[in-house]
Image (cartoon, rainbow, N blue to C red; front, side, top):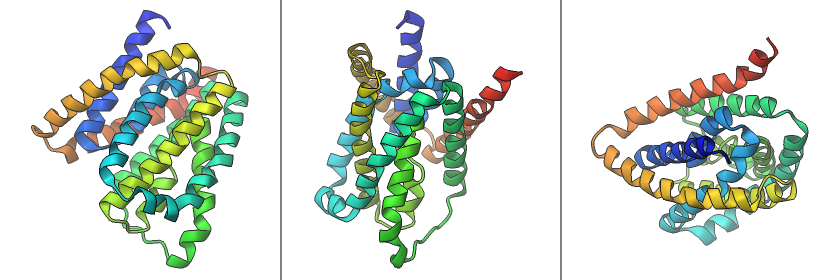
Length: 249
């Protein structure tokens, strides 16, 4: 990678880690739109694997209830497997700008949903039947765009889980998907030794950013900062979504 691209990558990692440390928002969600706008989505996806896995494992260790979560949600996690295969196949076929546009729409949906904060409740009779379709769709979106939050986030929120069980469930989903993504990206030639090295060195920026985010959290309202970041994600999502149109003009 060119030096200016490396600088962009580490700056994006640092920003996303500060957001993670301050508000708890996902590292990949905050990082992806910046990298997709600057170095392209296909170049960005493999760079996120190692930092995302590292942050997820730390959160999973602290949340507890791991065995219980796997037993309860294994259909959701396994449902993502064929979805990831479909999404990665689409990634090799779809133009990069159009894949970025899909990511933009996902970010707009995620930001709007989180800002609205609807109080969803899923009827118990639908929890099991919707697990595999939710995993399948989440995996497809993940494979194509790198985003891991939709629609698994609203599905898990609608179950009324307590905080620790929710955090464990969604981070198990993120971790499983990231491991499969690493394999899939290697198979299609996007995950190389060079990108893995850059991704690993990105952990320095991640650790630094999380520490800065923790300090920032003690000085300002995390909720206000969270809302600012969500509006920023919506704005970046809108830019990504309209980029293919702008390129054809």
